[in-house]
Length: 190
Ligand code: SF4
Image 1 (cartoon, rainbow, N blue to C red):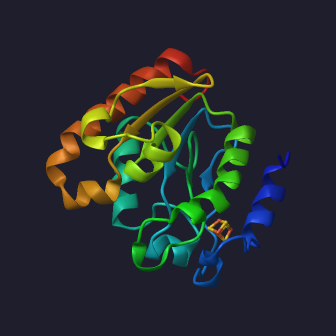
Image 2: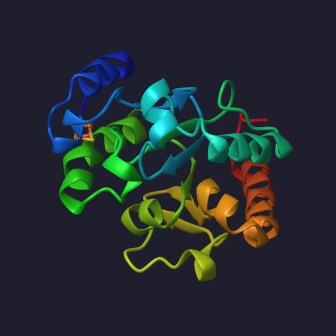
């Protein structure tokens, strides 16, 4: 494991471990506080994220920011947001298993350095990899499990909420559960 956050970021920014390096504009390492107690994990960058080098900055990202704001979380202050793969899969396809495998070490290293108390997986792909290989978002969203001492929850991906807005109330309830969990186990998020 790399012990320094900036060093890890620099290594990741120059990474050529999988084929996604050939089509990326920017590596999307992550954003937020390295001291965050709450970490959000998505699957991979989309077009806007690739262009700007920051996760969740398109319409889905704007929705995520609004939902975060409702429970007093902001990417500038008290959370960290990262993706499972750091380079955009062409045409926004799901990251392939070999690409996930090539990249997951960076995310593991981020988790190792940040040491979050809570991880929220945004969408099916992240929840499958991190929480449960059979995870079903529609059935299991909002449920907490504890793995290696970290409280984990999966919820809807913001882009999926834009496609299926009828799921927004359930997603918002998940965020309220997150707020309760933060009050219960976190020291300095609020
Ligand atoms: S997706 Fe990950 S493993 Fe592949 S080139 Fe980008 S940083 Fe490296």
